[in-house]
Every structure is written in C-alpha cells, then in structure tokens.
View 1 (cartoon, one colour):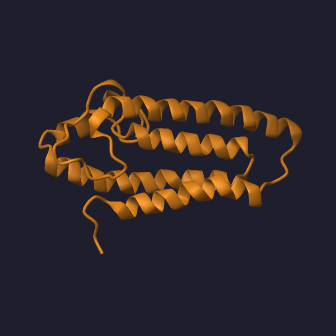
View 2 (view 1 turned 30 degrees about the horizontal axis):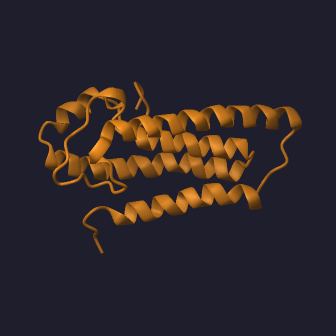
Length: 154
C-alpha cells in the first residue's frame, strides 16, 4: 500500500531509531577502560554535532518542516544556509546523533544499526528527491551542485 506522504519511511525510521536507543541496554559489550572512555567522549562530540545540525536544518526549513519525506504542497525549496552545503542535513544530523549515542553507550550492535541508517537515509532521500524534482523543476540543478548526505563528499 503506497502512502501519500511517505508514512512507511517514517515508521521504519522510528523503528531503527528505537532499536539504536534500546539496544545498548540489552547488548552492551565490555570495552576496555581506555577504549570506552575515548568512545564515550567521541560519542558525546559526534552526538552533539548531530543534534546541532538537526536544529540548524530545522530552523532553515521553517514552515517547510515536516516529518514526512514528501514536501508540503505549498512549500518552498530551501537552498540556503546549511542546505547550501548538504541537501539532507537533517538525515546527516540524525545519523551523527545515532552514532554518537551508540558510541557513548559503547554498544557495537547499536553502532552497526547506526551505520545501517546511512543506507536507510540514502534510500529515503532518493524517494524524497523524486518528489522534490516533481514539485520543483529547478531541483535538478541544486542536486548537481550540492552533495546528498555528507557535506562535500556524498
């Protein structure tokens, strides 16, 4: 059953994020003390960066913000600020936040699920971009100019 706004993408995203949050409590590995300390510090920094990216992206989207991948019918294409650096900064930020949480929890299983988010968001972004292209004819030029998920890289 196809959805109008991409509800199925949101449901899978919520399941993956819930798994990342809940996995550390049931699958926490014993990491050596120095490695665990480094992982926790790195996790805190990466997670904070991810949350900052999500917050800045949400501010730039303003009234265009929606949890669904299909753009709002009366929305405008955002290409300024953080959107001039990466086309899907919210996805980038969520990936970084999930990875940060997983490192902070020192859970290898949660880290693996966090890495799986990259594949998930790549596919979700591909669908979203089909809808964006249909709604905004100039999206193709923006797509050529700005990287998808990782600034300046991919």
